[in-house]
Length: 375
Image (cartoon, rainbow, N blue to C red; front, side):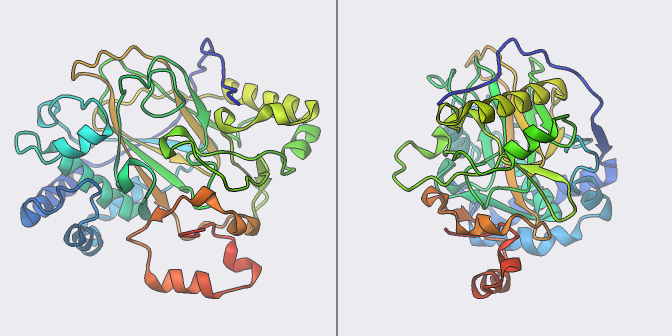
């Protein structure tokens, strides 16, 4: 099943959109996150950040942030489908050592000696709420709304965020699921080795009309990655790799490491390989610095990571990730019928009226937002 880009792939550095979070706006986010933490005491020190008091504070107080914050975290504005946001202040000493795995990261967030991790979690939820609706997955990192991405012993060579020594193949985040994020937010806690995140957009590739026709036909399923487990007995529907939205712009679902390419005919495999080559050709490779955010449009761009050697000494690369739903986005109507392999989203910021409306409507347009909470 594995089919990933060569680890000797050449990373082509292209310009990528950069935005600056004005100092006053950045300070406002930090101050509000700190105030929320102080108000709640130890209540948000949970494994999931789903404490009702914390969620209420995020929902009610995100509106206090300056307009410049919303402007900075709006979806990427260029065909590259990715944006680096600079200017969020962090101090390495406030975070403590890089955790050994995501479980340890959730526990140590409550360490009174190093509250920077918890405050950054709260800040990311505030930023994500300014951008859209942050959510998590019940089957991933215990439903945490802010995921910790750190290298973990024993996972060096797998295709997941816990890997290190292998190239993390460019992929659509949670490509297997109809309720996948529209927008990803990655925040850098530390990255001493300047490990690059790779980003490639379907709107920058060049493919023949024949390849486009081949890749728009639902041909193969995409399976959940190993962070969700491995025991899936539900039928896997074939999916298109590329399709065009109502404005005739290309969108995609792409995850070669979890797509059984050997089951396809030679024509499809050849077209898929040419798409993979194009992603390598147009690849952007920002190496995030502490305090920088990377916004990835998950509907048009794939992302991955170059290999690196993890030391497991408390100084390794550490990112945080939030999945964000953009209510205004429309996806294919057919996606609403997918079973999602039983994986459920944890969506505390989705309005109850929104959920009721989605469940109650039966016309085709009601399904085009790809916002199914539970398949």
